Length: 181
Image 1 (tube, rainbow, N blue to C red):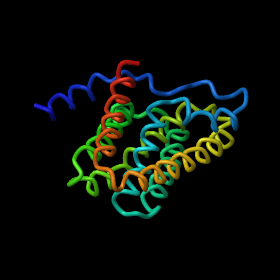
Image 2: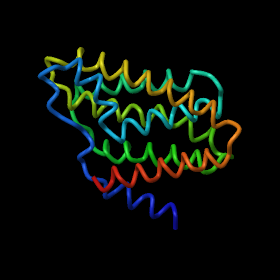
Image 3: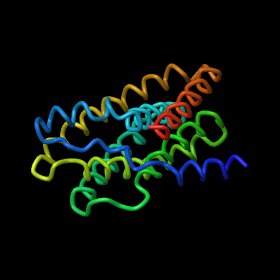
């Protein structure tokens, strides 16, 4: 039943996660974008937390950042892709599930760079073509900082299973807000 409900949520997600119109000050817009898009903010913090809880290294955040940038380049070059919004919402559900089911954290955390590819793809689609590189420099910088912040939070959560579950519940609530938006 839970899997069916999650699948239904993914299929009805509205294609409104992107924030187009980044051409007045592309670097500033790129710097602010991960902070103003709840979906991106939660995915980045959640991935950082998972990295701290599972591998205690920065490999996962770096892979996520690389996948996000690679996705941005693909979005810039190839445009929109079917299912992008559903994959973005899926990233929040998977990150939440990893927090709520600790026995699956490692497996689920390994999927996060795949989802990050689609987050980046959305960035590449929404960036003004002539301002892509400046916008990308901004969003990659802040995305890296958010992944590092999430890693720091995850280090604090290592000894607190109840807080890990609360964080996972927050990710689920955030996914619901994104879906409702």
